Image (cartoon, rainbow, N blue to C red; front, side, top):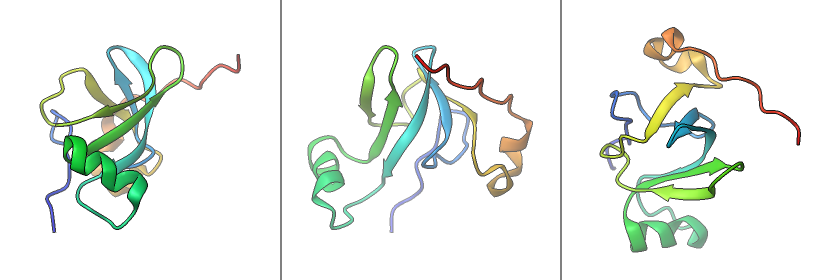
Length: 100
């Protein structure tokens, strides 16, 4: 089993996390730590290694980030599952998305 992916801050990356990527608000669409038997996500592991898909519809659309720990532009903002990590409770909440 692989080690959980972490932001530069040391917080574990989880699906649904709200983040900024290059200063733009986004969300972690999926996390790929190792081969899982899903051709759609296993491809990313084969091509780029473990990482995360960031959904940021305003500028980038979707971008696969790997390695996560080294990317200073991927910043944790909040989680939809605050109870999972006490360190997450001290983070500022993410502003709601505008409907365009």
